Length: 280
Image 1 (cartoon, rainbow, N blue to C red):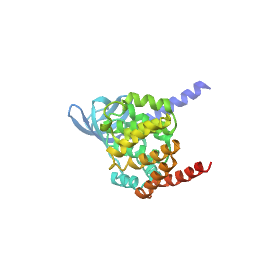
Image 2: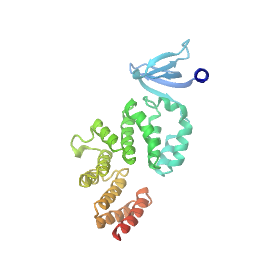
Image 3: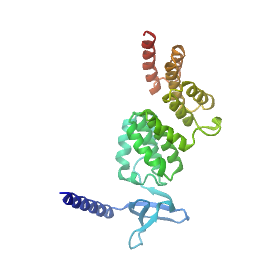
Image 4: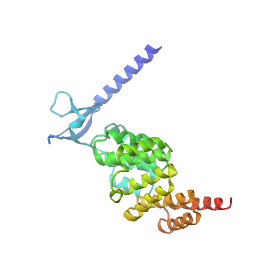
């Protein structure tokens, strides 16, 4: 039985390779040496990419580290993607990106024109609270992505997902590995400060968490991606510290400043929870 199953798998693998070879992907690529070509991508074997120019008799294997850029033809307007994200239509955005990108994401860790799409995809999964899917995508790019911006964004969502899943030790290990607690806090990004605050809340070190949140507000008050979640976390932390008046005050502030946002809805629920805690 095992031999039969193995034979079926080998035949299936062979047929898949044949089908892929019969349908090469048109791409443009540039090597780090400065040479640029247009041709076809025939497949991938780990860190080796099979590429072929029209004049070549057969594909040539090229090391992934030698590639500076690969440009796929993506029939998807990035402005439309950005608009869906801005309008917080995350479920619609996920369906669109998963459908359009398909098998191209096998190459998404390379420096390609897919990087902006994958940043939106990670964030969309995170915003709909699908932390396991976010973690799967983010972990794939956090270590292997050659595109530096994609790698950094992936690390942010990787650690945020682990914290949301309450995987404390794994989150702590990655924060240490990425060196996010080192250096001058004034120079830390808003997302780094927010992540450190979330981590300290999970560790039940509420006073330290509040110090990080104060720095988000002090140094990054114009960053609307991170200010609402930072203020919500501030209210949640006050609640954990049993400072209910302060927690309600922050919830009211969220209601005034971020009406219609996901944090606005969460702040309303938080106020109900605070009221219940007061009455115990």
